[in-house]
Length: 87
Image 1 (cartoon, rainbow, N blue to C red):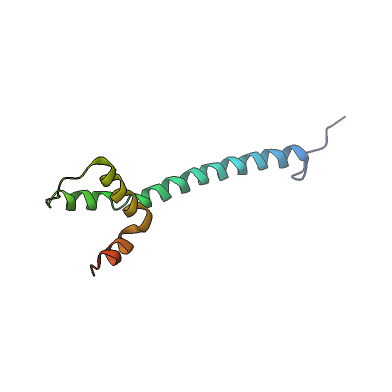
Image 2 (spheres, rainbow, N blue to C red):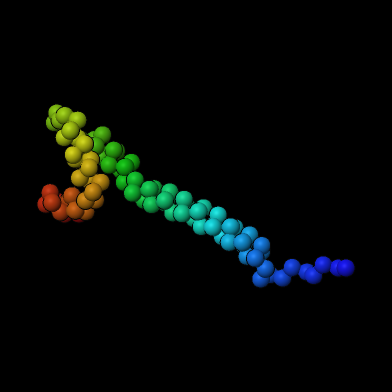
């Protein structure tokens, strides 16, 4: 006796499609995280380039970390506003 053809609505097909979609979502989540991280770090090169051209008074590691944390938290626009520097 011939077997009936599987229809697109059977449980195995649905489960396989779900697994494929979940894998695609996981890939998109990773791509999104990478893009967000790249966006968060987009200003590093410009900042380091600018810092290389100026003289900075002696500071300890804690002060440097505090400044870096403030830049990372507030962003360049808020830092400039707080320093009273307009662009």
